[in-house]
Length: 409
Image (tube, rainbow, N blue to C red):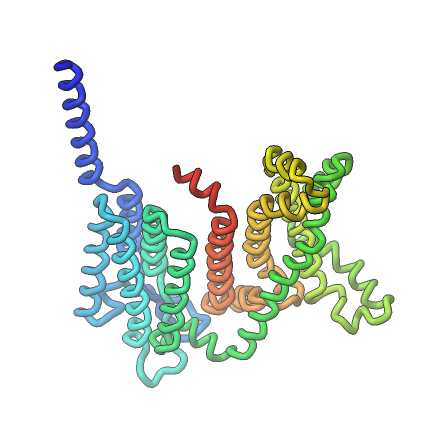
């Protein structure tokens, strides 16, 4: 008895020491992110100054991009936040600190636009530099990591996303970024921007909707008729391997012929270039995830659930709609999530063939060597894909809470 008591005491002492050392030791991810942020501050400028929108940029480091007191205050905030990330601090504290640091960085880069632009000069441009983007990236990753460590519920993550979107809207509405070059590009193209935004969403969401209408029944058919499953999935796999630009090119000739020879086709926008080939290509790329996830979802339904439904006297259609599809729905929703994020990114390429969307600004900016015009198209695309991924991930967890709880256990 005495030996076992001594062993238990030593074991408890060892566990306590381990927990203390674990709490007091450095955080590995935090150390990596701090190193990335420090490298950005040292080796990259905080802002870029241009005499006009197309000339070469002049790099401006943090301590020169703001009034001295403000510059040192921003630096102090980043250093203090980095110290918290280095230690194994509470996730809630890390989340708050990262959010505040990102807010300070956002206000600082907007303030640098005011500070660096001469008052009567309407041609000068100030853009965020590499330092701003790198430090923002590091603290954004740290914020996402803190939310994971907190094990936030799906509704909590949706609330955090809504707060982030609201803060960004408030920042833009306040005019704090009006002196930055990307907002000047937007001011010159506000009407065109929102028109292309609608086209971008039409391409991404519209092709997803059509793919769901076609792909889910095809997936059900593949599950029910095994003889066609391999052939259909292999065909869709081959289609998925075709590069996007090549697929756009392959669609030009047949769609041009349809637009020229089929009555009414040209009236609804079918042509060799434009929105039609972009829509068809996105639809084609969407089919494989929709079909394969539908098959996988139906295959994941436990046999016991089907046997219990059969024992209750349910008909085949009742078992399918009341047992199979509800249990398969989270996996099908995962396919929808994959397709939406994929299409939001691929829709940028529609700008190359006159299909519109945010790719219009990206490729115009590349042709004009105007980085800010590229960002005007790229940043909304990234933001939409990021928001879509968070929302649909939350919906998947809401639709399948049992597997989430078992995974956490």
